[in-house]
Image (cartoon, rainbow, N blue to C red; front, side, top):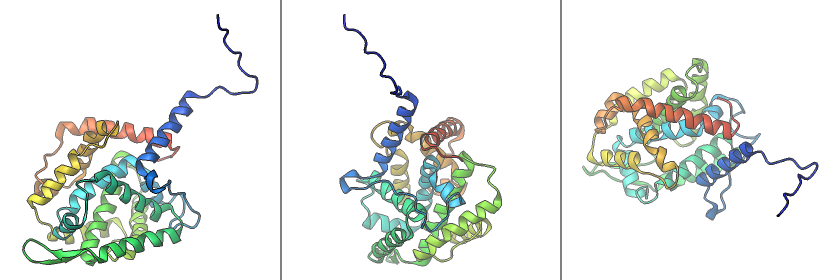
Length: 292
């Protein structure tokens, strides 16, 4: 019979829990970084726009709440006819939903955590892309992606929904002063992208949201995009949790937006979605050794 090899003195046995944690981190990083393009995770820099342990870095570090808030923000953005038409005319989101998510996540990561020179370069790249995005709406109205008011709607929906998802699923007790600081920090990026008006507190964000809401229109195209966003299932295990995250995203929307997009209130489905979202978020924070 083959004898078992004795344990080698001084060599620690592999920790299965630590092994599982590292494998999960590896899989998540692979999903958000395109290895075919040589992409690697954005390393946090001491020369970033924002200091460690400040509100924007805490909120943007939470993968699951950012995914939920990001979906909610995208649904709201599609109600703006100019933002919607730009996506329809110039984006390949239908064929590459995951690629769009990955590019957006990378932009947020580099502008939040990356060296300020890399952040400035990423912002300049987006501004160059926006400069070429222009055309006309179906009714003949011209649109341009550099319109400050359109950019303001994109920004305020992102900032509001990212923070709302964080408050709902991670840290509901976050002090109002920290919430205001989050908007003040995020305003730096919005202004560099050309948005105006740009809120610097939660109260200002609510006021800007109410003001820009008058620009929104319920359209079939917006409803079609909403269904695509909510029903798209990425390959692998992520596809099984997508419906729960989608329900969580719809739950965050204000009632008027659900009506305009012909979306039902998740109702009883909100409870299992919240449980799954909380559990997944806790797992990701454990894997990446983050504290809420």
